[in-house]
Length: 55
Image (cartoon, rainbow, N blue to C red):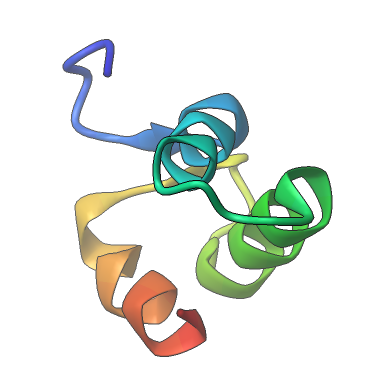
């Protein structure tokens, strides 16, 4: 959303909310933990496939 090329936990929450997903906090936390291979708190372009696999 902020065009920095990364997905933050808050951006992931907003995306889940936009799709009318349930358990937004839980899913965003688990999705970020699952996809963020380098543990920097963001999902980078290289980690996007990890997020897709999680979904």
